[in-house]
Image (cartoon, rainbow, N blue to C red; front, side, top):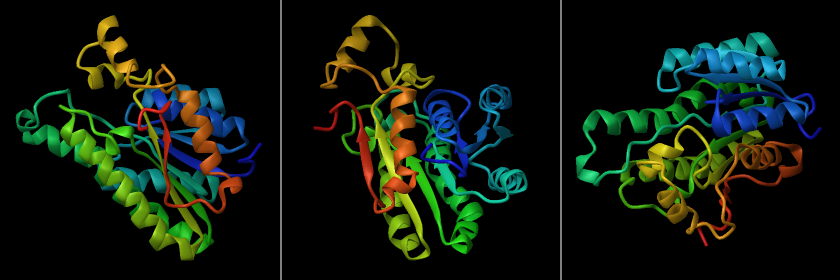
Length: 246
């Protein structure tokens, strides 16, 4: 029960990696706010965990502030923030991604980290403790062709993680990232363009351990990095990728 007594917010926790992280946090003793733009999905996962459901659009400042206030009201404090919500564009040549799609990717994947920091970092500083985890991607370390702006958004998240870690360390707040390879989540088909046995086989051939990341993999890594056992770890981008980035 490495997170016993901790209060956590996990964004994008209605499905996929976020749900896996929320489940592991609850299993490790944390109280969890399951935050997602899909309120029904958030409620379903929260009910399973005896957690708190919250609808949030992580790209909207007022919505993020409302999430922070709801967590404060429900828990009294927030010890852990996981910025997991994210989207991608479909594979295409970089010059063919339209401006609205580019803006949406950067709003959800990048601006959200700023908005949650603005809403929650002051409280963590006042507490003198806290853990923030950003769910980045191997795409930010070893980019794939035709996912250029998604790759760039996850590279931004990794740099933001390190910058946040340096600034917040004196306040006792740790900031880390995890970098999964593609997994069995709602975004998998979008990453691959289409989901066929041939495309899956080609994708899996780039992963030495020979399988996709799972929500349970992400939950285990996230629980460790957000626990006191990782008290001397900040500013890392941990590859949870079956060797993809070797």
